[in-house]
Amino acid sequence: MKRFWKDVGVSEVAGGFSVTLDGRALKTQGKRAQIVPNRALAEALAAEWAAQGEEIDPGTFVLRDLADMAIDVIAEDRAGSIAGLLRYAETDTLCYRAEPDEPLHARQLELWEPLLLAAEACWDVRFERISGVIHRPQAPATLARLKAVLEAKDTFALSALATLTPLSASLVIGLAALEADADARQLWTAAELEEEWQAELWGREEEAEARRAKRFAAFSAAMHFARLALG
Image (cartoon, rainbow, N blue to C red; front, top):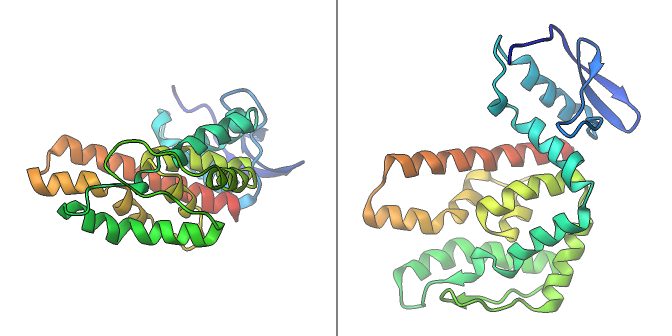
């Protein structure tokens, strides 16, 4: 599709801010009014439109897609979205360790245990650690507390989590990524620990490394979106 506008702007509207193209407010891909909570996020969305050349590249609208997810999907079914995220707490990758006598276990303990301990202290919960891959349920009280944590998030934070959590296979990492002082590379290193371990053992493949780089870019973009949305 060719570029069909000249001017990109940001307007304050009822409920927040909206991007305008030639003075006309944008809608989401679901045809709803695209209203975001603050000017900083609206200006970042506007920058994606302003950066387009004569041919529109849909793959460069990363923040737009996250905003539309918040408005078209999360806001329409908060309960379903929260339930989907909560499933990652039931099988959080940080809880599933190698056997204690295996070298990988020490690396997992070093990178994963501080994240779990911080989460437990923050939310007053207890996570079950498992050696092996056999599923062990988390305590109902832990899941109930995490559900309350998610219910307290707004739709834009939940939209960021809908990317952060599946990419890391961890609700703990996803929620940690929302913190203002979170380090994207540090969190991604924890999320990719087992893949990195395998690469160290068996060597790196160009295609696999490209996929990992793409996933990290998506993870970082979702963190950026969350920081903009949460102000």
